Every structure is written in structure tokens, then in C-alpha cells.
Image: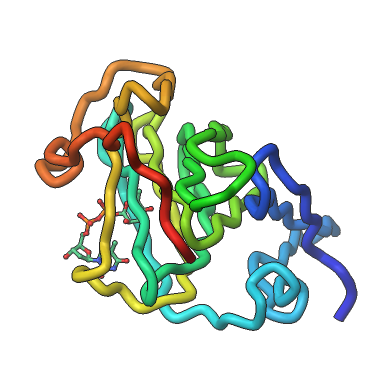
Length: 187
Ligand SMILES: Cc1cn([C@H]2C[C@H](O)[C@@H](COP(=O)(O)OP(=O)(O)O[C@H]3O[C@@H](C)C(=O)[C@@H](O)[C@H]3O)O2)c(=O)[nH]c1=O
């Protein structure tokens, strides 16, 4: 099988950069994008249940921040397959040493990079160029009844977006800021 995915722990415990080690030859190139066996140590044996594709027509589009509550809490793998996005992960896990801290990572079409986001972390992004596209792999089924969201402009998160927001869904705009006594999600 060999190792074809390079794992780098980020500043948020359990959030990993997963880089595909692309091989080149005279025909072109080949890269492994996902391997259950290689990622098992991080996914704790959970299998991929859903794969989604997100197309963002204009630069400046923001989606998120989104997560699912237990029992639908999930690992999510995110990859930019076209264009460029600034991707954000916020740690909402009760008791975590990085509780309410966030991470911003630029994901680009040709970087061969995915972000692995564990249960209890919220995810969102801003498209930096027109027609930026993301591919998601999820370890849970989509369960609307267990969806949660945070405001990307929540003052307590202090997320700096690279550009003004061009488009935000009504649902994302309707999220309320975290309460001062928010203690986190138990996953
Ligand atoms: C989130 C999600 C939505 N859907 C459906 C519901 C709805 O009919 C349609 C569009 O859903 P939304 O408007 O919620 O899509 P969107 O706002 O793009 O939601 C996504 O945002 C980013 C930040 C994420 O991290 C993703 O996991 C996902 O939550 O797709 C699924 O089938 N599976 C899913 O996992």
C-alpha cells in the first residue's frame, strides 16, 4: 500500500493537514486523495458516509461556520478542487486546550492539500476567486436536526476575512453570536 498521505498536526489539536504525495512521470501525475487505512488512526475507524461538492460562483462568497452535534458529529475532510479559498476551523470542543481558537488555511487547486476537521470543530470558508470549488468527505450522514452554526463575524472568534463578503446564505446570516457562558460541545 505504501504511505502516500503526509499528515501534519496544525495549531488546533486533532486538525490535520493531509497532503497527497503526487507522483510524476512522462504521462502526467497520480495522487492518492483518500485512504481509509492510512487515515484510520485519525478517523478512529469511522468510514466515509457522504461526499459533497460545493461550487462558489463569485469571489467573496462565505459559507459557514457549520458543524453537527452528537450523535451526528463528524470528521470532515475538505479539499479545494478548483480556484482558491481561505478555510477556517474553530474549536468548539468543551475542555479543549484550544477552545474557541481558530485556524485559517489557504487551500488551492494545485496544492494537493486537504484539511481534516474532527467532531466538535466548526468549519467555514471564503472563496478568494470566482468559481472556487470544494470537495467534502463526511463520516456522518447529513442530519439537519443536528446541524449547528456560528457567525463567521462572531466578535469573540476574531476571524479576519481576506475580503468583504459578497454573498452569505440567509441561514448563515441568521446565526447568533456565541453566548458569554458558552462552554463548548461535548463530543
Ligand atoms: C451540509 C449538507 C447539506 N446537504 C443539502 C441540504 C441542502 O438541500 C443543500 C445545501 O445545504 P447548505 O445550504 O447547508 O450548504 P452549505 O451552506 O454549503 O453547507 C456547507 O458549508 C460548509 C461550510 C461545510 O462545512 C459543509 O459541511 C456544509 O455544512 O444540500 C446535504 O445533502 N448534505 C450536507 O452535508
